[in-house]
Length: 107
Image (cartoon, rainbow, N blue to C red; front, top):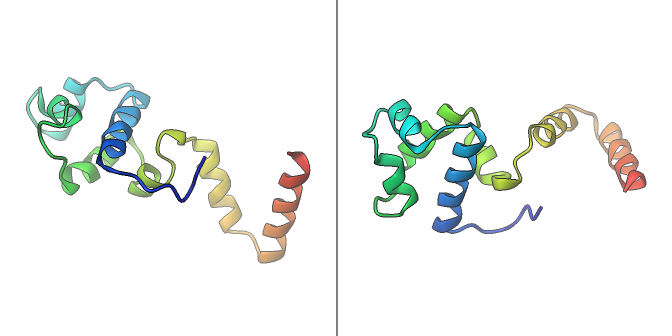
């Protein structure tokens, strides 16, 4: 996983499809949950309608992720990865280094 990868509009649209599928939602169901017409998400994913920030934020709420998850992990999203990052962020600097050293030895 490349963490510093720049993403373009096509990648954002790909991530929409990825997270929609991961949440087991059809385009139709997602459109309804967002309060739009049946074809709304299809038009966004086909790039005939531009995605607005508000829609992206609402989308993240519907599929149960944060906007940080959407941009940071993209299609590499894994709940375990997120949980590990949150746990590590709560550790002291020494404990964090110990975990890093352990992970390096396990590679």
